[in-house]
Length: 162
Image 1 (cartoon, one colour):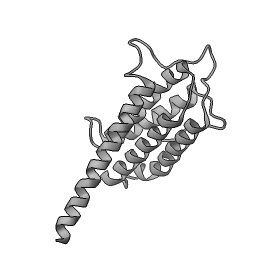
Image 2 (image 1 turned 45 degrees about the vertical axis):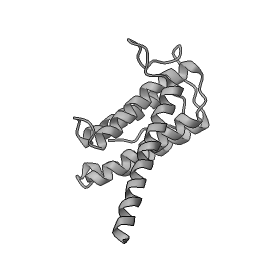
Image 3 (image 1 turned 60 degrees about the horizontal axis):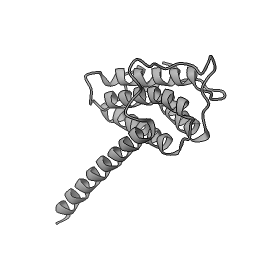
Image 4 (image 1 turned 90 degrees about the vertical axis):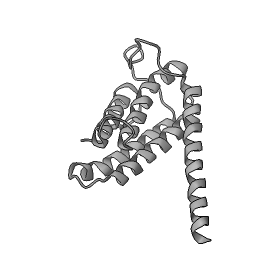
């Protein structure tokens, strides 16, 4: 009886996680569109960094801090598959928060989509969902954090160092 209940609870938890992930993706596609226009690339706003808002800065700071904490263990080879999966989940959660709460101008929002796409691709690789290695996924996230700092206004921003 207890085993049946545990299996039922585990199945419910899986369905909930999948539903939340699909809602976040749908929200991201609604908020940011299906993708950047063909041929478009991340660029500055007439030579200046794009404006950000508090929810975006909060989310990006949290992703950056999570990466900074993980990097020493990743470099020492002491970051296992479960650790990468946990880091990927944190990234997805923070990105979903930013998507739900940030209110950027449309042009800045379009540029942010490039950073979000890299963060999510990195998270997918860290989860083992791509041909890239989990380590390569962490590299993609670091590159996205560097791009964010290069193209978006975020006082005192310093991307986590590899």
